[in-house]
Image (tube, one colour):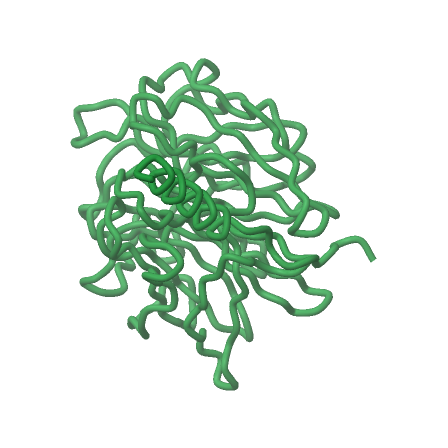
Length: 330
């Protein structure tokens, strides 16, 4: 009888586990959207494909390259391995993370953080690589960091590259509770002065700011988003502000993404897809599955993002079913 009870308990546990990872409803992506430990997802649309460029979520020293994922519809994803490898970055020694990828004049530019420098005497910071295709292979563009020192207290990490309507390219970045914005040269080889002569302008929006900045424009307004809390804990989250220019000023309006103890914890470091054909918005982020407490046990998820009538972002409901298919090809 005791043996039978043991096996009954085992079967019940297996049944409960299976239920927890049940298949998503038909036509939905399911979260996570692809298997494996991946974090800090960068979302981009190139042609008729959605692209996600995430950090490979391992211990720092083991984060030595990037994979990418593409999809025609947000549901079916193809993995592209080793699109950028540390061996192709001569100055990188350890820890590659937080991609930002853009297309310009038929080339694809992959911005990344490397080496996790702690002061200006160490080599590292924000780099940039280039390729002819969105799946690479990418190769180092400069032979050195694009930004390799601290300015305004901001650790040179977690960059996001943003093109304004007038064609100006900006990069927003910063850890250690400080955020900077810089104007990029047209060939992405350096930063250049802004109209007031400033090279590194601090735009830290609130004391709660930690890292992971990103920006988009909607309705003539600039939405500045960032991550708060501890990246390795359950309270990681995303907040936002709205301004009239990329330089702000920005005032924190509140959190829009955070853990749901019934779904997942540590929801943060995000990006967004905007699909112009139906004006739909999606937030792409990482989170930690229930029952996992290791800092690097992070997976990538997608959920819908909505706005109210005044243009404010509504709190995001994180889900296990994910989003419905939305093909880009008409």
